[in-house]
Image (cartoon, rainbow, N blue to C red):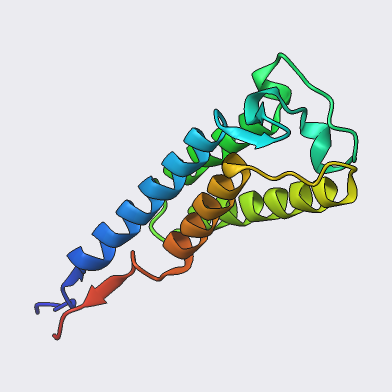
Amino acid sequence: MAIHAPAVRVAPIGVSSGIVLTGLGAAALVVSAFLDWTRNTQGIRVSWRAVVDSGFGGTPDLGRSVGGAAVLIGLVAMLGLFDVSGLLTALAGVAGVFGSVLFLIHVQRSADHSLQGGMWLALAGSVLCVVAGLGGTRGAVVVGE
């Protein structure tokens, strides 16, 4: 007695668009870390405390900067490519959007309201990661029995 199981294949267009969007989003996050975020200061020089405090102290340490957090989120988004559901990529994107919005709020509460391209690029990269993760692009398509 033979048991027949439906053949499962992954739609190539959906997979490639998810990979491209994830790659673009992660690249935007990594590049944004080295651009100016506010007050002509690169993201790797702005302390991560700027996300929760209106004082924008500088830091020489990449691991304690908003740019370092952007690089880490970009790497986590790329790791999400190994997850079939895309959930890790989406969660990385949501973390990036959340951090960017908190940073934006604290810049607007400070005396100098200047926002520069690095912060906007990080926000755009985070949104691309959310779209890539939640786009439903990596699901399997069942071919008729």
